[in-house]
Length: 297
Picture (cartoon, rainbow, N blue to C red):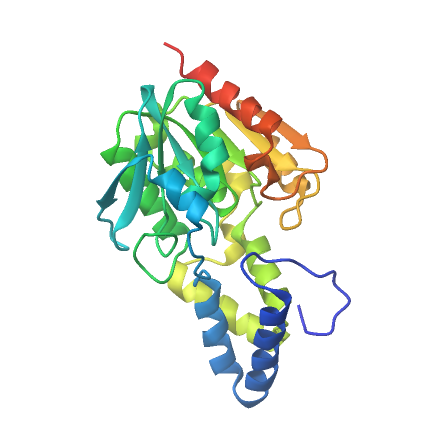
């Protein structure tokens, strides 16, 4: 959407208001002199997550896990495993996050005696790489699942939830899972792309160039990577959880996806923000119970 239009503002993770103002200024200036260069820069930024340092508290929590490095086509991935009974529950964070920020979820699952495996996606946390996209997230997920087999369920947040939907729908190796919990799920990459271009204040001309670069790289436009389409090919029980006050992804996205699931449930939790379901004790227990009940022998 063109800069200066009346569309409502969109939030994107990982940028402070001051940082966003500086980036918008750069794009305003650069777009005047070279729309093509502006588009190339935007395309690069779209797949470059902001580096987030691991907090001391999260580092202490991660130290309680057995950790190892796992090679993937996108660089080494940092894997954490906590012991428990039965097949592993895979836990996947969202964009600009890392495994340690899912401590409440991991502890909630472990309270049910479950074995838990989490990892830092490429270009996140302690994993290698500088850029990430749906394919690098998904390749890492598949590699971790194979290395930590048997796996029985997955709990994923935000961009990680969209990755999980893609993996569950399209990877035969995921067919053996018994349950999935997807938290703060975006409807498609198109919405995330639009949020990014609006936040950056890109002109219509630059946006069209970025879309062309995206299609040249991935073979399709952002909106073609859709959770509503993927959901039709997921046949295991799925619980969708969404904060009613999500500042990044409207709860309507989860509601759209829920209609396409063969075996789906949805819980929209009033008053919770995008990441709050990962820390809210009652919601954490709800998700842990959903998984635990389906991993019972």
